[in-house]
Image 1 (cartoon, rainbow, N blue to C red):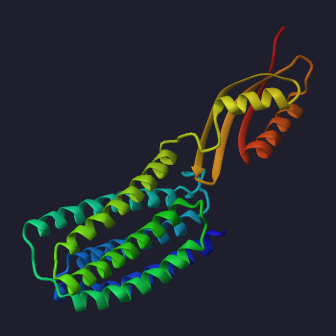
Image 2 (cartoon, helix red, strand yellow):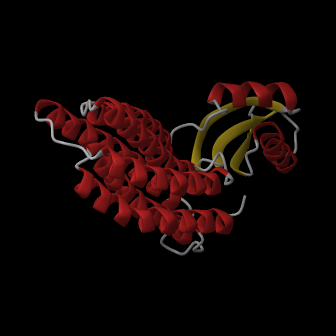
Length: 283
């Protein structure tokens, strides 16, 4: 999946959520619904987060230069991390407001709440479908998608709250359902922040381990005596990098061995960028 396609999907979703956000703010103020205002606030942060995700893709396309030899590919990972933190902060805010609403209930106009929430649900379903068709392994895309899913769940909660209020008049349903949505958003935010933070901290990519690399090279590449100084990290979630030192058996061609090790890393671990130093064993 190309970066250009991901950028286009995020831009469309940003326009959809930003456009409907105005209607939700007006509806929330008129109806007095926390669920609707919380969803509008979520849409506001979503619009900013989707724009941030778009900017991450745009900057990631810039070529490497003398000051940044790896280029700007990590910008989309940084955007994903920021979006994860925003999701966590948003969830905490919704819970805080819900507690205040439970302690000090206010009237809620169920009819207005139902109409606006239904429109929001349609918009969010369209935006989620657009983003869901993007790269499933792209953390920036997943961060943007989860912002929209949070909106979608918020619309569902607002519709459910409106139905309960219209049928029973029980207004605490509004903040209670908002808390349930906030908890789901919190889980997604923590997951995205943890995964993107792992990349930013140069953590070992999923599916790679230094012990696994060592054992595989010793078992499958001829003339490898030992493997040491292995480091594995990811430039992005889909671009792992590896550096290591290989000790060649006596008489082995070091250049041939270096190429064989790089080929094995590409075939067995999908590592297209590896720095391999080969030294000859002295006996």
